[in-house]
Length: 265
Image 1 (cartoon, one colour):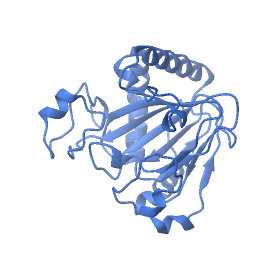
Image 2 (cartoon, helix red, strand yellow; image 1 turned 90 degrees about the vertical axis):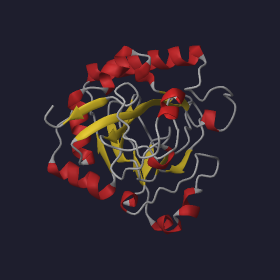
Image 3 (tube, helix red, strand yellow; image 1 turned 60 degrees about the vertical axis):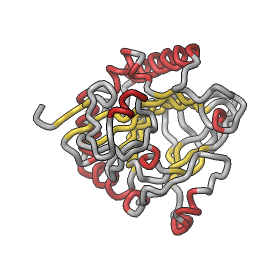
């Protein structure tokens, strides 16, 4: 794993709001991520629980991607990958924070001939507001212009508010909220399997349709700066925990939002 960052990479991330690291994983690491992610997804889909979006596989959103959340909660292998302190220190460095926690992980498999992913921001969906939250996106298959690689609007994290739109059929809905962003040239990020893309949770991003007859699989994880506080939105918080906290409380439950890395510990 290419976890050592250069100052140039840190500067690029701070300026653009995203950073692509080609071949982030070594071949053996990629195989582990592929195998454990697929195993965890298969288990989740077989269980037909609430943390996937395949209850109606024919609706539009279910065909944007097969989405399975919080796999680290149910699969020990995924937990070990995502709670890796070396990875945590790298992510905290990009985020510019002294501690980092998992917000939630999710597998995002764009199915063959899958729908495009509309432009959106991440943080406004979540139960906290932080301008330095960060998401990691790992390509388990080659991500290409043909099968729905990621696209970013560079620099949008610097001016974004916490207003947002849902991921629906209107690719351009976000520009009703931020019309000035229409003039920003989107940057496509095709990358080979094993590459990683890190982006700020307020950087506008989306993905094209999968125009191929093969899936485009990715494993992602959202990381929350340590010390972030509850904003009143439930999102993926367990019901019992959600009912036990109030806005302004620190989100530091070691099970719900485990600490991955903290400076000096």
